Amino acid sequence: MADPRLPDANDRLACVIESLDGTWHRPFTTFELAAIQSLVEPEEQLELDGLSDQAWRERIGNAVPPAAAEAVADVMGTTLLLVAQGETFVLSSMPIWVRPVAVGLSVAQREAA
Image 1 (cartoon, one colour):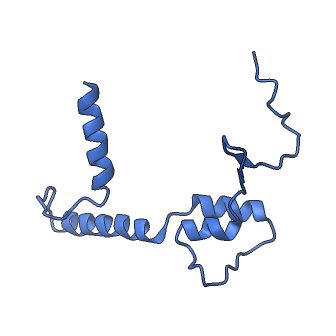
Image 2 (tube, rainbow, N blue to C red; image 1 turned 135 degrees about the vertical axis):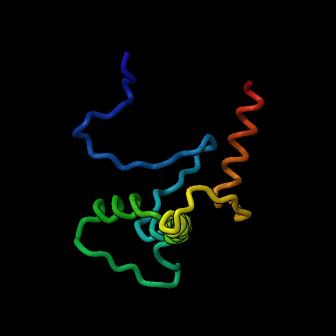
């Protein structure tokens, strides 16, 4: 049976996150979302193209944070240079930039087995 509290598809909503003790937390502003993605510094002005706040928020959400994009591009560039030189495998001492997540996942899998 469907949840009777669910709104209809055409209902206009004002979403508020409410905690168990009754306090509520407002949704993030567009500027705060851009700051979380490292697209803007808190002391900078945010200037986006267009007039649709929804479109801005969608673009910000789909963006790749600059530091992550740089890390991915560095590895891709190194790989392309090695392939151009005929290297197909290189044992490297460079740390894996996503190592903490990978370690956490491998530990969780071992415990489950």
